[in-house]
Image (cartoon, rainbow, N blue to C red; front, side):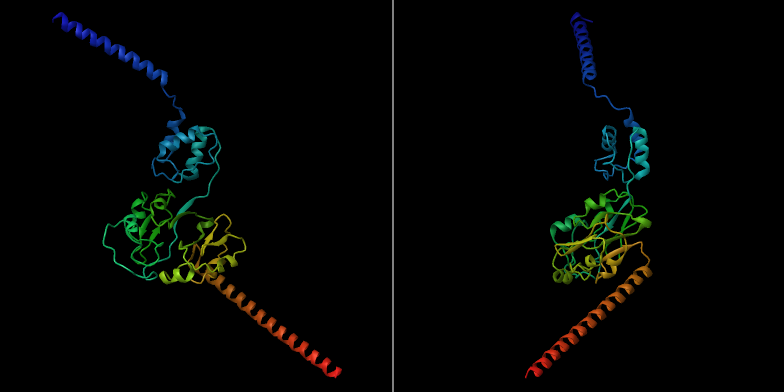
Length: 320
């Protein structure tokens, strides 16, 4: 081997060693100390990377949990309270239990309820169809019916009902991961508390058009009549922009608003039909009683007016 080659090899070895020393020094100087609890928290999480917690994946969520002083703003919808309790135990922090949520479909515009206007011949994707036009059926706010929400669900918790043309949520499988909510271009899917004994009441409509216009497009549309709000004793229902809305934090699940709605687009999930029928009978009896009371009041007012008139005429006759 010539001297030139030998010197070249030695120089390259020296440069390599120097570069290795510099890289090691830099890595030690600027290395980020990882919390040893991070791996334990990661193992406790379900690793579904659904994004329901508000982070892109479980890794980002785990980092936030480890670095947080207070765990109350955080919740894993897939793992639920059990997983969050395990995480709290690992980190030596406290966590509050949260009521489980489930996805609900706020649209009652099934096939036959909404006016059929056009035939769509394009990509079987709700977002694409929604960007192109308002949909095959009346009510531009209603479900497109192409099942993009079903495709977005990683837990097989949704399917399209061929009879109604609407998505159906399988509550036992739903993890409230929020994927279907963010995917729906019409914003008709929402997360709702499962409620006591799996009971919940919500309004299956998002149409804010005036009652007459909305009903022409969909016979199940909310007209904004406010009968449900008048029936509610807990101020849980408000009417804004001709659309009734329920505050689930105030709702006591009494069911009275359900029977007050003329079109019954207020969903009472988990309620027995006979209970709703009984509420309807009570309301009908009450309204009949109120109607009778008003009739008697009118008759009484007429009688008093007639008596007053007769008394006035009598006084007039005597004065003459």
